[in-house]
Image (cartoon, rainbow, N blue to C red):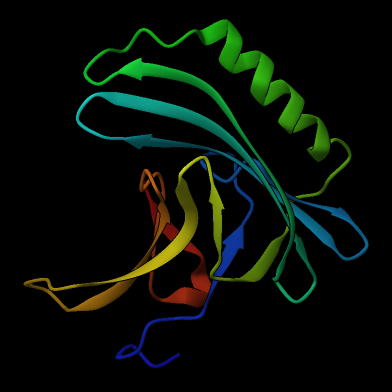
Length: 153
C-alpha cells in the first residue's frame, strides 16, 4: 500500500488483548465484537458493537446496542449491565477461531452518530503517516505497516 494515500482496508488479527472479540465464526463469516463510546460536553454513551464481515472483508450485518449513558466526567458505569450486554454479544463468537482478515473501512450510522473506521493523516516528528481510527470514541487506532495488523488504544 502506498503510504501517501489513505488505506481502504486494514488487517484485523485476533489476539488476547483488544481484538479478543474478533473471530472467524463460519466458513466465510467473521465477527468483531467491541465496545465503543461517544461523548460530548454533557454525556458519555456506551455501546456494544457486533459487526459481521464476509470473506472479502465487507460488512454484511451489524448489531450496535446502546446500553448506558453517564454524565461526562463520571465513571459510575454499571459493570453488571456491561457484563450482561457484552455476554450477549460474545455469544456470537462461541466456537469461533482466532483468525485474520483484511476488512474494508466502513461507516454505520446509528444512535445519532457514526460507527466507523476513519482514516486520519498524522503529522509526526518521526514520520508523517496514515492511521485508521475506530470511531466515534477512537477506542482503537490502526497504523502501518498495514499487513502486520498493528494498533494501539
